Picture 1 (cartoon, rainbow, N blue to C red):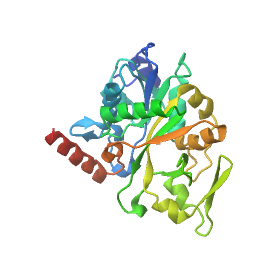
Picture 2: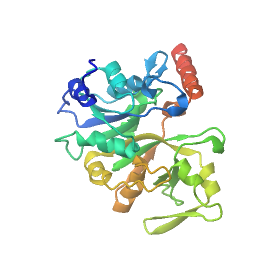
Picture 3: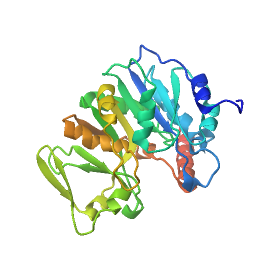
Picture 4: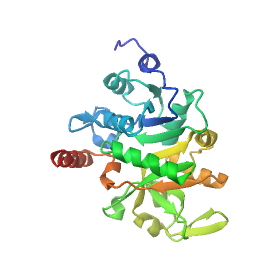
Length: 298
């Protein structure tokens, strides 16, 4: 690609028209860098068995949902990611110039879309989740349709020490419904006072959680979501950055949906490893080891 081209020119050049007959599209978040990787390469181009993680996520979506359209949000090292992926059918690129969080990335993705019906299904996936497969996407889609919810989150179960769990925790109602009422980021939990419980209102009831209880909660947010398009567009602009990192979190949509009276469901994959993402070379190596073992056992 010529050095004289701007990123937006490359975005336009490599984007392809959506399939208007499809009522489903995926937003793949591929704008992050991953500073803890200590690598000059884009986080999204780090490979599992020789295939970049962003391509693995892309392929899982394409195989999991027939005819699906795709938006790939690029940011840091945008040219490298786009140059690798190139022009693909039913795929457009969106450029997140400044990274203000996952919610902001989705806002950027939606800005370039037109004529999408309200009942369309939108899937949101991190570009580093290189072990996710078509079977998981297909099952997640079925879970969403069965739930008849307006939003669903894919959750994982953390198997290590609670203090090492940096994922956002799934907060469920302490009643028979066990409905998801919040996702709370790890850094925001650490910022809570030690001697005062965290309280949240849900459907007219007040629920209380100690800081220790939240830290020890091993059910976490995988970063994979599905929404009814109309509800997502309605609520995405309501997101605020009043948190420790001053970022716009997509996870805050759960609270907003609940406050509006919209329904939020949760589902877990059959295989916990499919929701692994990575921020370090050590975790990436572990993901490669898992992929190799799966490949050898086929």
